[in-house]
Amino acid sequence: MRLTSIALLLVALAGCSPKSGALTPDLTRRFESEGIVRQADDQVFRYTEGGGKRGGMWDEGRASIVVTKATVFLHRGARVMVEITTTNGADYSVHRDHDRVAIHTGTGRSAKVWSFRPTDDAEAWAKDMRAVVKGVATE
Image 1 (tube, rainbow, N blue to C red):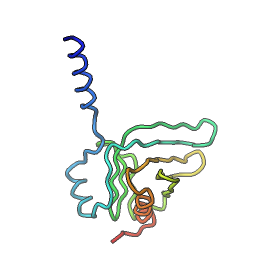
Image 2: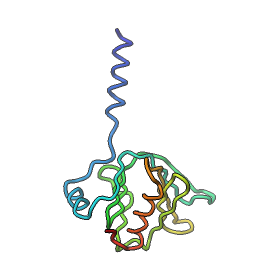
Image 3: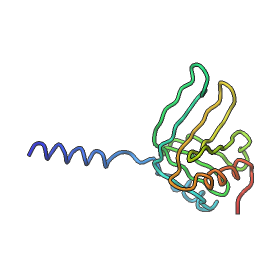
Image 4: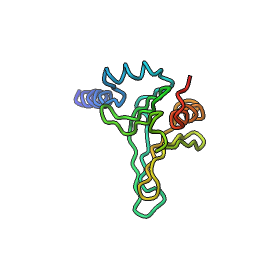
């Protein structure tokens, strides 16, 4: 009986892990008006700072991403990690390496990268994100 109770508790706790995809009603309206092109919740993102340099660091965690015709929005619930728009895209670049898509910002010691493996078509994700970076609202 006790083992069954512990097993049920563990299953319940696993199902209660926080979700990263919740957006405020205002953001939901904004993204819907911009036209959502791609969206993925609770993806494993790798954050790298100063990659390849002595003292560089990295970490992995779950986050969600929304790509519209005018915005790339990487967030963990209410916490905004990256927000790229067609007007600030010059500060960012998007690269694809096989099945991984990476958002780059900064150079040298201030360089930061957020990368993930989309569940489908990494090239299409990269193309849609690059359109925002280039300041071109996609149709």
